[in-house]
Length: 143
Image (cartoon, rainbow, N blue to C red):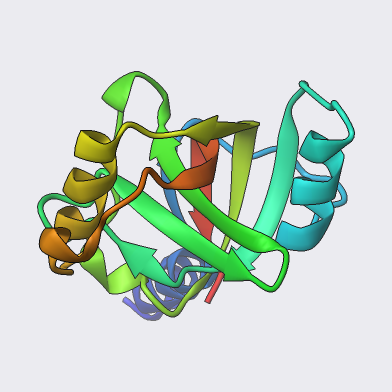
């Protein structure tokens, strides 16, 4: 009986220390900050990036995107092939996301839709938004 309790406690402790994971497993390695990732894209990088950042926004409709903010710019993270979503509760948490990023100008209609999904007033949007779009294959919630 003591052995069963010890095993159950060990499994519980192991499970509690693992990060929440969405999508494909994120590889180990050095991650970039949001400003580093933006600078890399602005310099022409087109490969896979690993970014660690605080989540500053989440799609309020269904968790189909999350956002990172920095002095260098904002990044909207979507999920490859709509293969997964994240819970609203990841806002304010630190995550590691792996995927590709590019700089894109949204249409005015898409800009309004984005603001609405973020919980804002779309009538305040009068010009297209230029944003960095990160398409994640996986996201790990660290804290």
